[in-house]
Image (tube, rainbow, N blue to C red; front, side, top):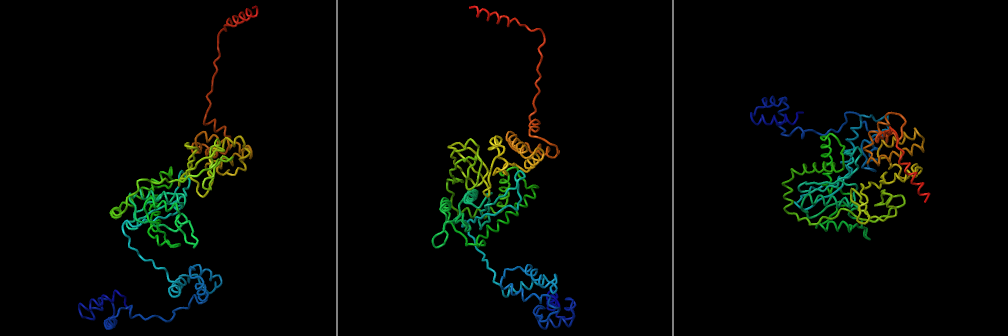
Amino acid sequence: MINEKQYRRLLREFARTNNMSHSALSAGVDRKTARKYLKEQRCPEEQRSPRTWRTRADPLEAIWPEAEKRLRDAPELEAKTLFEYLQKFYAEGVPDGALRTFQRRVAEWRRQHGPEPEVIFAQIHRPGEVMQIDWTRARELEVSVQSRPLDHLLCQAVLPYSNWQWATRCCSESFLSLRQGLQEALFRLGKVPERLQIDNSTTVTHDVRRDGKREFNAEFLSLVGHFGLNPRTIAVRCPNQNGDVESHQGHLKRRLHQHLLLRGTRNFDSEEEYDRFVEGVLVAANAPRASKVAEELSVMKELPPVRLCEFSEEDCRVGCHSTVRVRHAVYSVPARYIGERLRARVFEQRVELFRGHERVLEVPRSVGRKPRIDYRHVIESLLRKPGAFARYRYREELFPNLTYRRALDRLVEDHGAREGELEYLRLLKLTAELGGASTLDSLLSEYLSQGMRWRTASLRAYLFPREEVSLKTLEGPVDLSPYDGLLQGSEVMHAN
């Protein structure tokens, strides 16, 4: 049997020359074969009859009836998983090399007997009509800040017509992150589309009616009402309805990954530097879309003149542990505020504490309700009560980094548990005086690598050497006449 290329050449040459021998020679086929195909006027594929016989023994004969039964019960089973499972019971009759044959047969069974896959219908987008918004976890980027992993999400907004996109870093899929991400995108864009489309999460639709249907939260309705957006949610467990932003999540992380490779390092000096890096990547990605973005802006509404505040407030009281509880997370505060009532402003990235109009503290917001205890707030009290350190509930939060953890282990090994812990508290006190762990980290690592016994006093002496004070000796005779005058004056006073 000849192939399609030979068949087309045969027809072309015969139409040109009307010579059977010449046409067969040009196509590289026998003259009799050429005559047969020219007479039939059917391509080789049409003349091929289906094969109804086997050329070798069926390697899946032992397991296929059981495989069909399993597939009918659970059509979502993967072929390789099912093959490995059945091999345990039919190890002698099923060779390992039959896996690919089994996968093809399972695929054919699914085409004939399995459920029909869902059809995705392509949509026509109109300029300025809708903005889609969604969150994605960016842990796989392996970004770190000052060598500490930065676990974060990206809240991304996309315009489906122009593919314009913007993303902001956030801690969680919360209403605060939605308010921050939406406002950043809208004010960066400069206009407001007609609708906002988002998934059916509790951030948006937490209220449940008596009939079981979910309604928009009051806070969310207030947010979209401020910008004049018409809210719309996709169906539950149907992310394809938000397909544009879902697709852009993967594209954005791949783009960031490539630029991180070009940067040469994934470590940043601060979270603000990482935010500027993401902003630069997004600006470059949006540049080729400028013409379509202009079409969208021409039909969009104007932004409101006022930007909503991006925090929520709640009252809290400083307990006897020198801590407050804000949004189910524990934060330490200076001990002088114990018993005071403070007002907390909760932003997506940070928490600010106020006493009246005085800002008491600003700390990064806790992720996953993890306590945030600053050793500088409690070190003075711990030095007065060093025995409390051994079983302190937030003991693990008193290690600024791994070097300090190693330092405690070394001090306990050299001086015993009680004395070693006291020395560690003194080390924290010295760290607080120096303004942070980064100042002392390299020197502490050097002390630990030397393998000798040491105390915090030696570190203090090295950092703050004392100047030797020399006392000069007075030489020469001493004049005692002033004392004689004092004695004579005393005798005169007694005589009177």
